[in-house]
Length: 251
Image (cartoon, helix red, strand yellow):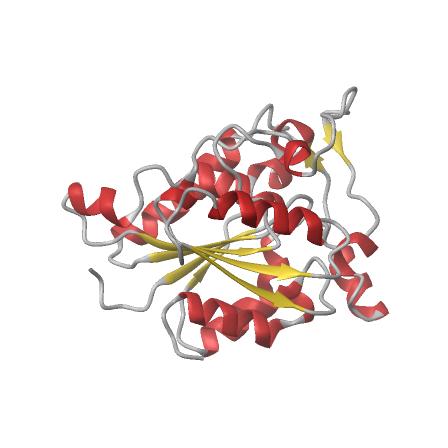
């Protein structure tokens, strides 16, 4: 087991970029944590090579995690929104029990989800939302109105972060989870009751699904009242504290 502080690997959501994590990265770095924020190909490469499925995002997440594990650090993954699906799909064999059995000293020790789609194997976003699968989608999807993501930010901040939104590959967005990572890795789930993109009812439904069939305490939750879809922008201090708790700090 590594004695170093774990590395937070931050996985952005649909239409977002690593730069959206900047305020949270600054805060975590100030508390002595290393952070990694890979760019998902479904957004980063959408204009040159749109993703046909979720696999490129999953592979990118896994490579980022393995690089940290191989450097001697444990990892806490921090997915936001859509980012939960490629994140959990990337975690097969990276939990503590599996890594120890392979004679490795490091592992993924927690999934710290921010209003994220943490789903069992085989489920996708429409099913989590209890909606039918969309049909006739364009290969490249423009982002929805920024108010869905930033309703609790002031106008200037909303414009600043909205300017960084990019189109997204629809083939990735509606991909299915390929691994029930919550069964082998503890989950810390931050709910936001004013989220307009992933409604609270959907968040709570996912948490209930995750809790079913796992030992008590495997899934921990906290609620941010009056918070929208992007607590890493609107509630940086509280989000930082939530992450530090998931790393074992008494905050």
